[in-house]
Image (cartoon, rainbow, N blue to C red):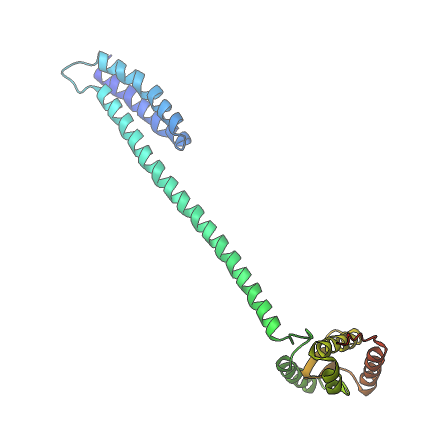
Length: 231
């Protein structure tokens, strides 16, 4: 076999090796076996049959096989590191999104708690002031009515002094239960104005609707069985 034929065989072998190796580049064992099966037999045959006074194509084949193996080895590790970094970035982005969601929920919960009265769990005075301001402006723009009920518990100070603060707190909670049960329209607001005073804002409600609600609240509170544990 002449030198030209050997070079042609080697070029065909190199082309087949380079093109076929891309399909198994991520499988190290399969890649190594593929290179050995493709190059080693022909390279050994070329080494045994080449003339001593010519460049031996077998050495070129072995050199190319080693070079391709080393390049694949380095590129494999580079690709793996890149994929690890990409997966790590995705994981970090997922954790960041989860943290942001939890933070938003915590902020919303904190905002809700800051707008509520701790004892009765209805809106506090600050939220009532903001709500009334918004609804008042909206009523002016829309030219509709807005109702406001002012509720005060009679003789509460004497009750509180007689039965104690714990009984007084429980009394306030029970009164709020009666109010909230009768204020059921969407958009209306029940709030603690201060001490034993409560307010109800009724959006788009005329005097008759406000009076009817007030009577229902009075009846609900009057009929409520307040329990007192005397000391």
